[in-house]
Length: 439
Image 1: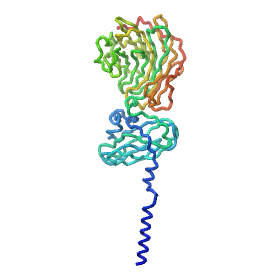
Image 2: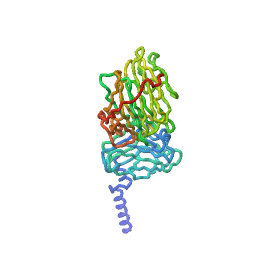
Image 3: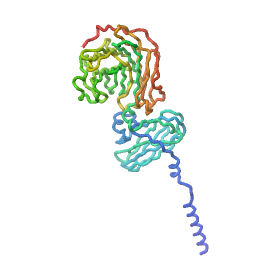
Image 4: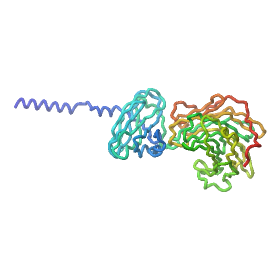
């Protein structure tokens, strides 16, 4: 009896000691070791990088949803000024049952299983960031229990590397995913009326990304340039805004509607809206990267307080100036003002891909009959850039051309309102205006 009592007493002490121990299980220590204090909205900062079609389905303003394809590679981008440990987690759920996903940062991958059917914080682990700048967290499904892999509302990060984080907020979902638009404003002849505006555009090989608008001849009332509209279609586009302020062309009064005075062969002319309203004209033309194209725009006052704008396009493959269209803008009497170029992406699903364009040999022809070379430009950018939501934008001068580059999450960034000067050519355009097609 005494021996039994002693053994029982020792056993009781041992159990008590185990229950009173302050040590924690490995899982508890893992959870407490992660700092997930910064929330990055998944929707505004993610892309399905191997399929634009899937991207449009899977990435929404509320996060990553409708995720069914194990082949989808999803990347969420952010910029950090810090280095060292990066702690990563997701606010996610897997409502159809257990899914296995692979998470990769900086070439290091971790595989986790997710089975919670309601949104919870799912901790992924620690990674190492060796350099400041843009980085991405890559996600791919490996296994799923049924139709859906999971839903991710937010990515959660922390640790020493997560300092001074740059990302797109949810309220800029659409334009943030399109990426920053960048512009060059040219120094035009002072004290003179510009009647003709000439520019040359070269898209380097490999930079002709779907969704790109390489806008050559912009002015106060419209724009003229070339686009990559899809994998099978490219356009030369010329548009003029109505003086009536609306995004719905059906609301424009008759005396404010932009009129088509005539257009070239195979040119479509139609109303447009959603970004102001007016008249647009375009020619489907399979222009090539690495080839230089020329743009020529005329603007001059016309009858009854209106202005006529006429656009011509020169492709070396064709060998002559082609009329795009001549459009009349009522309630406006002016010559060409605020001459500029820009680069933008109009397809959000390609906002993770960089693109670049070169603008060269800008000239203005004034009403006194002289050409003036425009060799100075000021770099500007849109609100996505100026508000610091994305910093992957740059521009400047390269020899006798200016350039613009955006999207792709590169680390170069040109300060907004920087001015540049390119090398002059001193060779004015050799154009006989009398030989141009008149609508």
